[in-house]
Image (cartoon, rainbow, N blue to C red; front, side, top):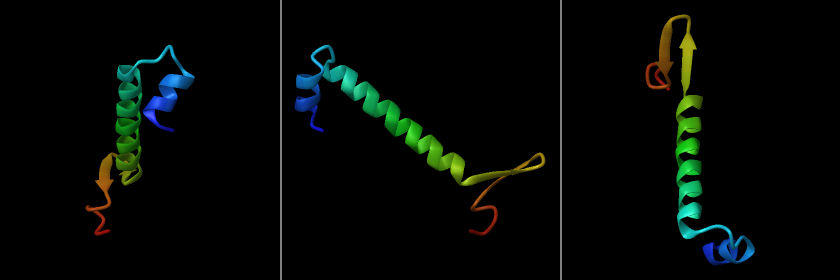
Length: 53
């Protein structure tokens, strides 16, 4: 959906609102990807790099 269409469908939103939501989604996605590549074994925190992946 384009920014123009979102603003048309949701007139209460501003361009700043849309940019804020996209920024939040991007940060969340990055966090989820990073977290999914990490493992905790007991008290030792490993990443895939530590495991030779």
